[in-house]
Amino acid sequence: MISSTLFGLASLASAALAAANCTGINAISPKCASKEALHHRDFFYVGGHYVAGAAGNLTYDQLYVEKLTPARGVNQSRPVVLFHGGGTSGVTWLNTPDNRKGFASHLLDYGYQVYIVDQTSVGRGSAENLNDYVMRIGSTAEISEKGFTAPEITNAYPQSQQHTQWPGSGLKGDPIFDAFESTFIPLTSNLTVQELSMRSSGCQLLSLIGPSFLVSHSIGALHPLLLSNDCPSLVAGNINLEPGNIPFQSYVGNATSSVGRTSARPWGMTNTHVTYDPPIANSSELAYKLVGDDTPANRSCYMQTGTIHKLTEVAKVKYVALTGSASPHITYEHCVIDFLQQAGVNAEWIKLADKGIVGNGHFGYLELNSPQIAGVVHEWIQSSC
Ligand SMILES: *[C@@H]1O[C@H](CO)[C@@H](O)[C@H](O)[C@H]1NC(C)=O
Ligand SMILES: *[C@@H]1O[C@H](CO)[C@@H](O)[C@H](O)[C@H]1NC(C)=O
Ligand SMILES: *[C@@H]1O[C@H](CO)[C@@H](O)[C@H](O)[C@H]1NC(C)=O
Ligand SMILES: *[C@@H]1O[C@H](CO)[C@@H](O)[C@H](O)[C@H]1NC(C)=O
Ligand SMILES: *[C@@H]1O[C@H](CO)[C@@H](O)[C@H](O)[C@H]1NC(C)=O
Ligand SMILES: *[C@@H]1O[C@H](CO)[C@@H](O)[C@H](O)[C@H]1NC(C)=O
Ligand SMILES: *[C@@H]1O[C@H](CO)[C@@H](O)[C@H](O)[C@H]1NC(C)=O
Image (cartoon, rainbow, N blue to C red; front, side, top):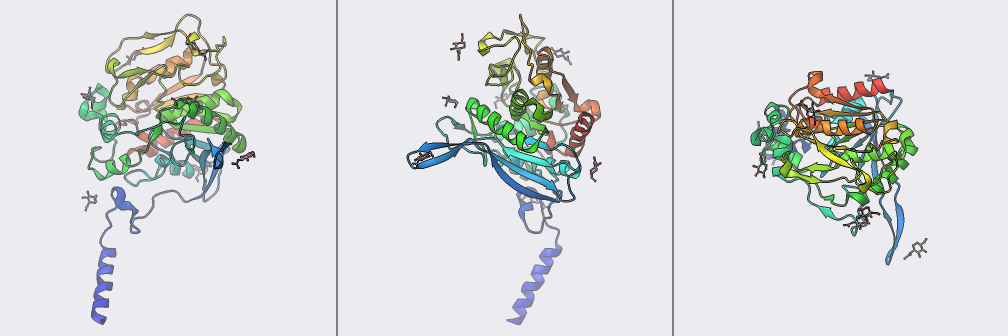
């Protein structure tokens, strides 16, 4: 009896002495320390409205918001609000798939009050209204490998060969990739209803917290653009990590060629109306045409033609896009910048390579040099305060 207890204690002690394996999901073990910044966390649901149903009244369209406060206090004048991209949720800003400090933590370290949202209908966002919020699958492992974590293997565009910053092989079966891929969850295919609820709840959020810097990833860039249109005085700056709302067209996974493009976003960079001058009542009044040579390294773009309509409200907010040197976006992000500039928006483009930050794919904020990318965001905010 005594000896078996002693044996049990001895094996516990030796397990504790052995270095814990904290790769991928293994980091959930009590033996693995958190790398996140010390902070306090509160949550809120913002906006939404009651809809009467047979069983009673349900709340529709409310926005899930987490409020992260640095433990040693906030010392930046403006909050930062983080908007995730398609198929994932607000968790994407927390600890990385290889268990390094997440992007939100870097911002907490700089002293910002940080807010993280889950898009309406996604994650902890509301999806009561399933009639309108038709859900679809998130990113498959194959789309993630080719488009995000290992584009160098399919080599759909020459810059993919410079991709070096993804932790691990970036392929199915690698524990870091598997942890990343597990963050993909269903998303809505009806961006109209989602945009309408995000712009209503989003401006309510900003009216509660005051003018803020909005940081988005990929197709999450739809929402800060719409909030810039609807409540520009509440948007201190609009920071887009690889914006996915390419004017009038979408690219899927590795499909950067004309074959892989589909028409999208009839209002230019959004699915729902934004203010143009001269005003338009219907997006069909926007005339646009494809310009520029189309090569795998540099894609052609849609630009307005004829009467150029200006995005007068969006133009009230400073805009910046950050792009990784090895991401598919490096081949078409100029389309976003050129379109916005033509529409009168002071849009700035930071190619991360110009700052000496190289080797990033589409999820740079999760990659090995993510602290440097957070540094660029911080620097831009400081220069815009
Ligand atoms: C750590 O765990 C991962 C995932 O289970 C495994 O692939 C890897 O080989 C392990 N590493 C060591 C050093 O045991
Ligand atoms: C839903 O709320 C409305 C307005 O407050 C109320 O009139 C109605 O009875 C409620 N529906 C149910 C089923 O309780
Ligand atoms: C806020 O605190 C952080 C962490 O100590 C520091 O890096 C930053 O410079 C401070 N910023 C201001 C505006 O005081
Ligand atoms: C892109 O992915 C598709 C489907 O997985 C594949 O068939 C195709 O060869 C890939 N294209 C390039 C250019 O790598
Ligand atoms: C998408 O949402 C809009 C706005 O709620 C709704 O009018 C429309 O019917 C929905 N479309 C689909 C295909 O569900
Ligand atoms: C917008 O214009 C198109 C093409 O003329 C037309 O089919 C559509 O019904 C119009 N939409 C609205 C809301 O008026
Ligand atoms: C890419 O194409 C655009 C036009 O779509 C052009 O303005 C730009 O100079 C090109 N960039 C490079 C690096 O060739």
